[in-house]
Amino acid sequence: MKNASVTPALVFLIADAAVGVAFVLLPPLVMGFLLLLKDVFGVLVLPFTFLFGLAGWSSDMSSLDSVMGGLTPNVLRHPFRAISAAIMIAVGGLCSVLACGSPRAAVVERRMAPLFTLGAAVLGGPELGLIMLPAFLLQLAALRRPEMDFFSRNK
Image (cartoon, rainbow, N blue to C red):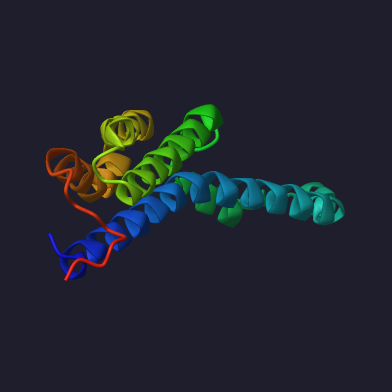
């Protein structure tokens, strides 16, 4: 295959891996920030909450609770799974890039890349599996056609 037809596939695979890592790591980061924000605002409004409670009014920051309740509930329960899935995505992408440097010699990297991507999809759930499906299919195509050389200039 010529380099002009295969290089966009590598770029797409790397971009898909980056989107997968962001999909896995951004929700816990946002939830942690919202929990910190809730704690800070809880301390700042504590005197007013006490005074409003004495007056018979009850306000317990329902707007911030509703924002946090709308996000996925399992985000902070499984941080090890999220980190493991992100590492597996990154290692699968790295194996794909390393396999492209020497297309015929990198048999182990070509075989390990789809396995890492599949493991990340299993750990991350069906949503991550759908995001990583194009990268997985590209890795399987590279496994099937080892002559796909991304870095050389074949003319």
